[in-house]
Length: 323
Image (cartoon, rainbow, N blue to C red):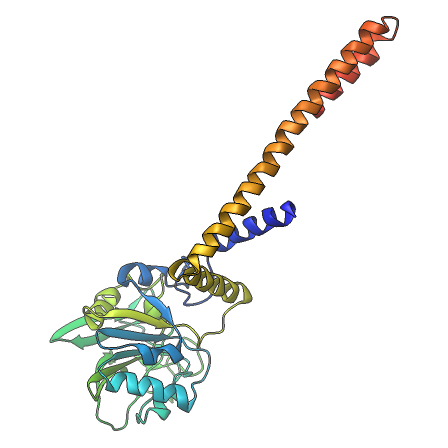
């Protein structure tokens, strides 16, 4: 019983102190995580179904979705924006196109790789993009991003790649005759109802390895303003460990923030008492047994002085080492 409790305690410690390493995970401190984004802006996770509970003064990020959206989910998100919310969709492989389609936006993320051999950060696949926000031009850096096709609609492109950029469709690191040159639309903005939607053709500008490059952080800070930040997490493929960790965190939060915290406190107190009592008895019991055994051996030596003292001494040492 106590062994099970000890194993459970160790398991909970691992869950508490070993973070997720999934792409775009808010608690992932590695290069592909978003722990810095969470630290800078106080981002909180949320599911699409719970977005309908959000009100004004909030901004919602959908970053690198790996699952397509349903019409019902798109309706929830469209209503959120219409009520005055701000929605930021950052994607490069096009999984968010289902959302853009169901929301009635005549735009889509192409999915082809954007390259720039001149305006870049170290690599042509980390191109510089110019974004105009509140009459300010910011220079942000993409990381294997794409571009947005926006043939028509009520919005506008506020971010463009340079004239030297091109679409490297075959990823051979050189421009071919059939590959178009820029500039390309990279950041799109549109007002819907009382709210606003931003579409960014790269999800990696928010990860730990990129958020402090160029004006990436300043750009995100500008569109966040003073809104409370939420990140949709149920459109990502998460590892079993991350799912278990998230569920555990939710359960702990539920237990500590509702009326359940009172019976939980009682159960923990009782468990701690009996666990402490068990370990105390184990420790003191072993010491007592060791001392008693040593006295018995010494008594035998006194009663039988002809016995081999070396054998008896070895026996005493073994008893002491066991204690």
